[in-house]
Length: 580
Ligand SMILES: Nc1ncnc2c1ncn2[C@@H]1O[C@H](COP(=O)(O)OP(=O)(O)OP(=O)(O)O)[C@@H](O)[C@H]1O
Ligand SMILES: [Mg+2]
Image (cartoon, rainbow, N blue to C red; front, side, top):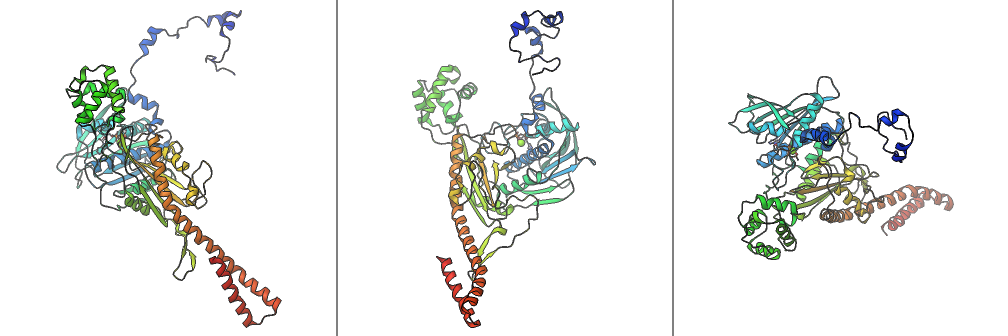
């Protein structure tokens, strides 16, 4: 192996021998401490805190900004997620406008603008929301929302600033009578603090809402993993949302609401004792405002009443009226063990809002053309103390590939409708099915193979439901599988929120939900196969009878009357065999 100039040879195997050998003077001098050699003192001078913004500037791939194409989609996604969260929290029917425009004639720089009719953001918070990483309203609350980390939109703004040098522009009006303000925000990455310029302005008819514009380096392409596809998927899982989209060429696509009902309101819950880890318990004990351990257990956790609190204290050997702040670490560890050994009611489920079978089908029908739809929505259960629910929807069979029996018993192929949109979700009959994944109603576009959802779909035996399935792969067929994971905390495998971690409880629920939907699908697929077989046999009859009749006519020297009779008799015999 050769070593680049100036680079240490890390693979030199016998350093002592090398040092002992008689070598030229120049080589010996190399071993003396050089000007750049460090010691503890000099290293101490370099050791300092790294701000979270500096960290993510270097590691922007962790947040989904690793390629210009992905960056464009991630920025749109973060802004749309926030708009929908804000509207739903304020119980407003979301109207969201997304616009992508080229900057000048550039094919590499774009402005993305997302406008909502949400509650707006108070002026004093705008800087922190858009110009400070790890700042948000959702991280500390246990309730279902699209965002959870407090990093999404500020990361998009930071990426924009990094690639174009332009600040994030925000307009916000936090109420009908409130003053609208326009802001320009940059991030001081060394301090992870915003620099804000604010100006009041008149937002005309608009009562309330927020608009964010980010200039960024990106790449615009249609098709799979595009902004168009993301918005379409968003419309599937959020049939209560109106989306208005303008692409860089000025084409407008509208996704209409299919329901006026907002998702059910979610309540914030306290942590469930069964999910809590020792370090978290220690922190909670230290920060508790309650004066007794019994009160701490009852007030700071969900599902702990006086009886359960007493049982935990007894098992832990801790007095219920002792002061939580005076507990030793060993006492807290005993409380943790006692919690694990105590039966406690599952957490309240009002903190999550699954979509529901009916609306999954409504959403699928709206955006995926198929001839059979089915959905399964499982009851919420718990992983690590966090409630979650799995929902599965299936759209099967392209109208063009479908055989239908008419009233007269004739089997016909339904005409293929040409899709009017490039982002068609359904694949062809000989292609792997299309899997669409969602976490808290947000489409997960990247990292499909790393996701628990994909693993569960592959592990399901789709042959049981009449589909072909190569080993270790998605089944084959004209089908879209929709899977939704709804929870107070989605265990994403990275900050970019692209794939869900494979906790055992999650895998089991996915398995059950997919099997249930699969069973419903199975009877339909089998019916379709029966029709297809009949269609094939009928085709044979229609193809071969004329030839048989000609042959019979020749061999038996039949006249025209006898030929007609022979044709009719043959048809009857073959029809009979078809029905067997
Ligand atoms: N359009 C908006 N309307 C109202 N509030 C908003 C809007 N966009 C952002 N916010 C507020 O700004 C906060 C920060 O947003 P950000 O996207 O950075 O983090 P998040 O949504 O909390 O979590 P995540 O990092 O997972 O997206 C949000 O928690 C929310 O309180
Ligand atoms: Mg967000």
